[in-house]
Image (tube, rainbow, N blue to C red; front, side, top):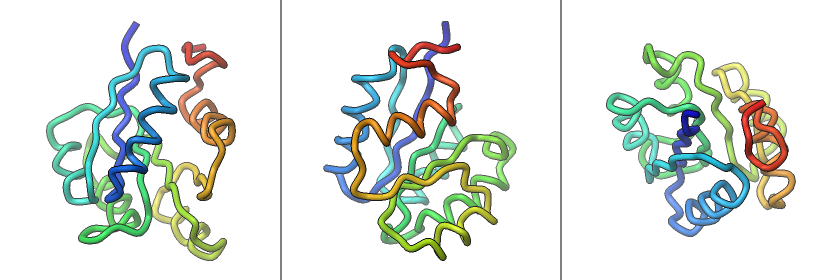
Length: 131
């Protein structure tokens, strides 16, 4: 069985660590890639196959919305589920959806809330197994 490959994009090292810890705990087989901003994430997408992108919205350099726009223009980024992690407003959420955001997780979040969205987007069952 193939590992799910997650790209975690956040300019906060501690937030990337939290996301990685949750995924390692709940997803049976996964590879975790990291990027500290949107530009770094795009460079990763140009060289790596990724199954899911989890990104912060507000980052220095290239923000999450610009990352979504550029990822959707790449051949291997058109259909990747993209999840935004942010404490932004409903208006920002609505705006992000028009650019191709798949799901939104509001900060602060619980481990259960985070994994509900991950399971929905990736079709993983409880315990991290594929369906």
